[in-house]
Each structure stands twice: as C-alpha cells, then as structure tokens.
Length: 218
Picture (cartoon, one colour):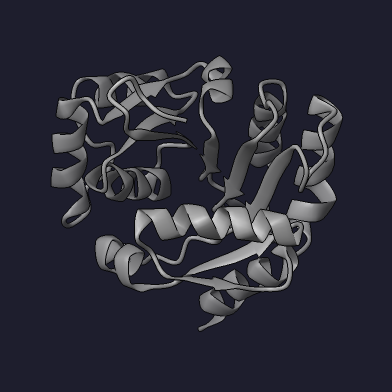
C-alpha cells in the first residue's frame, strides 16, 4: 500500500537489530516504514528520531529517515491491515537447546487478526526447519479464514547479516525466497526486486529455513 505522498509503505514487526537495519535500508530506497514493537520505550525512541541500535552506516541512515518521517513506529497491531507488505523480524532466542518461538507465535496471532486479502507476509526471523509451514501458516489461515497463495502470500526470507557489516550484507547478499506456493514466491520476489535487491528462489520455506541454518554453520 502507499502513503499519502505516494511512497510504497511496509510494516516491519520487531524493531530490534534485524528490523532496524532492514528499515534503514527500505527507507533509504523511498519506502515508508511503520515499525511495530511491543516495547513502548523503543517506540518512543524511534518517534524521537533515535535508532535503537548502534551499527555502522545503519544508525545514521535510520535516524535521518526517522527525523524525516520515513520511519515511524507504533505498539498497536491494528495498523497491520493498512500495509500490503508485512515483514516479521522478531527474535527467536535459544531456550535451553531449542529456539524460543513464543514471540513469533504471539506476533503471528496478532497479525492474523488484522490480515486482509491481497497482503504479503514475509518472515525474516531465524526459524527451525518446518516452522513457516507447520506453525505460522496454520495460525494465519485459522485467524483470517483466507487462503495462502490466493488471498494472501507467505514466504520465509532469512536475514543473512553480521553485526558490524549489516548494511553491506543487506545490499550485496541475495535474498533467499521460500514461498509457500509458486504465487507466493513470485509475489515476494517482485517485492525485493522493487527494493533493488537480488533474489534466489528455493523450493519451499523449509529449504529457505535450512539455508539460514547452513549459513549459521558456516
């Protein structure tokens, strides 16, 4: 969807390191970003034109965009329905030996209550293999009653950044696209193409999740 100024606009859910870095890049490329985060202090920080993280290149560009109004923030999920593209970047910290998916599941439920037809949902959180299709998709479809690949698009596109080189990694590393259906992959690839990023399509969200795992091993 677009802002009143005619700019493309997206919602980024989770304004930690990954969400903040991506938001800075999107805003730099004339995309208005509405960051959604349950941390009210972080939301206020962004509203005051401050970047929540310290990262080379990212911090300055984020703060410039926030001051210009190209990056805004809220703790309310009811704005999700206003954005054609929703990108989820919430953390999945380790709980003992397994990733804690509670934040991902909670956010997915909140998004599901607001999702409308013709929206695209992209997950960039680090997820165990199978999570997108076995956990996320059922939540979204049960909450919305809409069908993936027909009424909304869903894909997993893992973040592939390292602290200290986030901007270079975002702009030079191809985005791996694992759509639930072929239509999902095509839609999400078109989004990243419009941002100006190279993409590499894999056969499924699980393949994309395994790509992230392989990156971590490397």
